[in-house]
Image 1 (cartoon, one colour):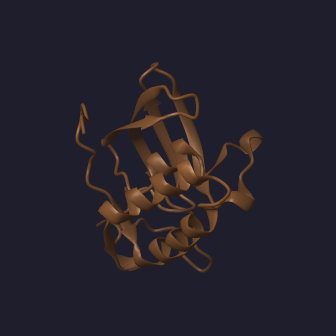
Image 2 (cartoon, rainbow, N blue to C red):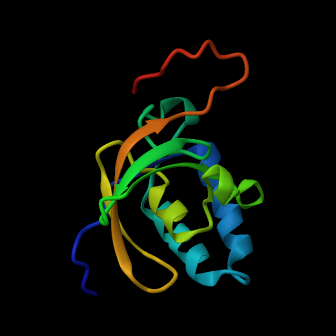
Image 3 (cartoon, rainbow, N blue to C red):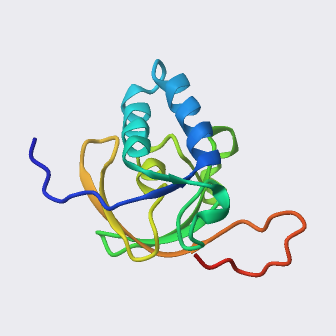
Length: 142
């Protein structure tokens, strides 16, 4: 197996891990390539309690700014498939780029394969967590 670059370490909350593992298992028949890639990412993730995930790590619902290898910068929100809406920059976890983003922290880069088979690299520039109901908006550092 020849990999040009080792994948970065990723962190996933126990809550996201359970939901994503079930989602990947359910999607194996419909979308095996992306489902298998998501399972692979989850297998190498450090799973921690939701309250212990660092604030700059991409989780479900996070809004992420990233720089692509084509020097393009994008800002997207990582969502579950039923919430995806490209017009609102809501990217499904069951897309190659969504799977690549999960668990990355600000400053980390990853190489991912698009549906057309081409390899791309992206670097996370910033991560914003969704405001939780009843939160005072204070940022959580970790």
